[in-house]
Length: 193
Image (cartoon, rainbow, N blue to C red; front, side, top):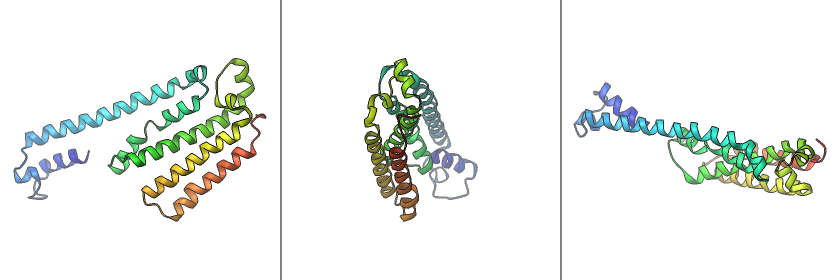
């Protein structure tokens, strides 16, 4: 969107800088207009992808409980659908390392909370034939959720490193949630809703 902004700004306020492409004559106003239209169309296409994809992923989540034992993982992907769009919107850059780390962290976090939440209905889900991680994992639920917590923790650590975060981020934004999740995982009774 920055390119669109600069294209229109140079046409509207040409006296800002004599070295800019439109003002200097290197790019004509019709060429800049075509660029602006293409950039705006690209932004609308990206928004359309996110608006169409998110409800499709989230809306099919309840059906996944009938087809697979890992619907929380599917929900994690649905919840992470917007991570690339948000990252680019915030930073203006497409950084695969950061996007993958934040996306995987989001997915792991979703598996954690959704599976703990599903334990409330575990007995009813078993009777109804609903497939869920809480049903599939049985008594192995705490070790499995600990794996998701460690993956969440490692992804946040790496994302913080890639983003140049400071000690306060690690103390409040990474270590505290990691320990809180571990405490929740090992202190709740998954057989007693």
